[in-house]
Each structure stands twice: as structure tokens, then as C-alpha cells.
View 1 (cartoon, rainbow, N blue to C red):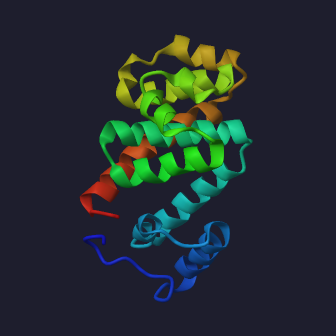
View 2 (view 1 turned 45 degrees about the horizontal axis):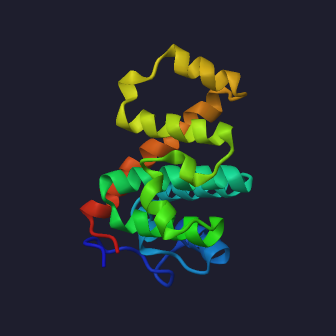
Length: 174
């Protein structure tokens, strides 16, 4: 149980209740992790809209974003996020436990399209060595057909996992 008191579905009110209803409709339940965001309703709204946007991508892109979240969380040792995203990778995308244990060191194990494998590598580099990114990296992403917003969203996803990992570990979210 979280060190902070998080709103339950029964206690939620107003916009938080509306978002919780959407989450429950989409996933069947509101996790403790998402409930933590309700302590700041604007943050909850941002996080839920961010999740919904990623759910609207094609399957390969959803898998890539889930891998970003999984690998960043693995490197940060956030057990909650490793379990959640690892479960998604196995249940939704058919990855095995063996593949999950290898993917951080060998991105080809993920079996993404060549383009999405490059995007995954870039996103991970953005949080492990952000100062190493230069104009050539951005030009390479443009050559793959990405625009500035898509490049921004890749880095936002990876860096948001640093925030999520910190919040969940700081407040002992289970």
C-alpha cells in the first residue's frame, strides 16, 4: 500500500471520478499506481490523456512505447513498472520471460520493425545519455519520417518513466 493515502474509486469525486470511470471502463480497474496521480487532478488528467494517446497507436508502436517504459523502469529498478509493463509485453505482445530478460541488452529481441527499433534505441539514449544527442540524430529521425512532435513524444515517454519510477518508488506503490 502506498505511503500516501490515494483515492479509491468510491472516494473519487468530480473530474477524478470521471477519469477513474474511463480507466475502469478501459482496463477493468484503477490501479494503485494511477490512483496516486489523483492527488494532483491536473497530473492525473495529463497522465490519463498520455496513456490514451499511446493506446491509439498501431500494435507495433504500442509495443515500442511499452518497451520504452519497461526498459527505463528496469534500469531504474522500479518493480511496479517492470511488472506492469512486462506483463503487458507478455500478455498483449507475446514476449516470453526470456525475451524480457534479454531485451534491454539486445533490442532486436523485441522483434519490432526496423524503424521502431531505431526509435526505441533513440528514446532510451535520451534518458541514459541525453547530452550525446546531436543534430545528426535528429536528422536521422527526420529521414525516418518523424516530425518534431513525434520526436518530442519519444523523449517525453522515456523521461516520464523516470518521473513515474521516482513517484512509485518514493511512495512505495504496490
